[in-house]
Amino acid sequence: MLPLVNQASVLVGFRPSWSGPAEPEQNLSAVSPDERRRLRRMISNRESARRSRARKQRHLEELRGQAGRLRSQNHELADRLGCLARRCLLLRQDNDRLRAEASALCRRLADLRREVALRQFHRLVAPPPLGAHYELAWASLIV
Image (tube, rainbow, N blue to C red; front, side):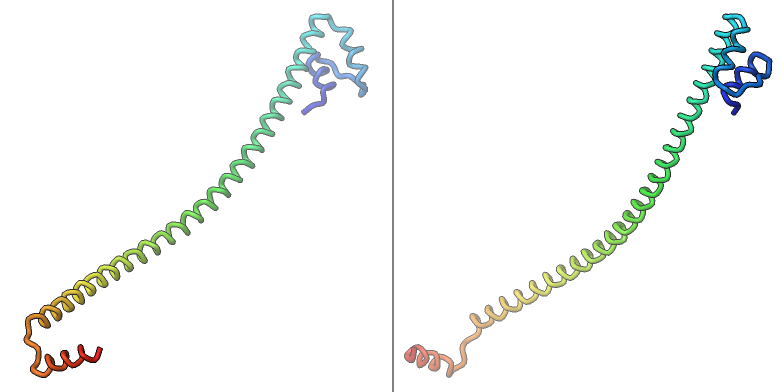
């Protein structure tokens, strides 16, 4: 981009030989007041456009940085989600195994309860052996 002094000279159509900031005003004084206002407005507009481009550039850099951070965060979250999904699968498999084991234990308990009930029933129904009655009588006397 041309320096501000050179922009003014290009707009007017002449080439100054100065390098200081006061001389452009001297050369601009040779131009009509309307032309000076127009030139100042053009220079001001160009400076405003330059500042606007700089703001846009800063904003773009901020957005790029934010996009990079968000991509990184997204990658971390995807990794965490994958770990949690694997853990969830393992827990579901473990739950299925434990449910099957609990079901098998419930069936075994029901079988054992039926067997105990059947043994109690057979003791009540079956006559005691001949000597058992006397043994019980003697045992009750001892106690």
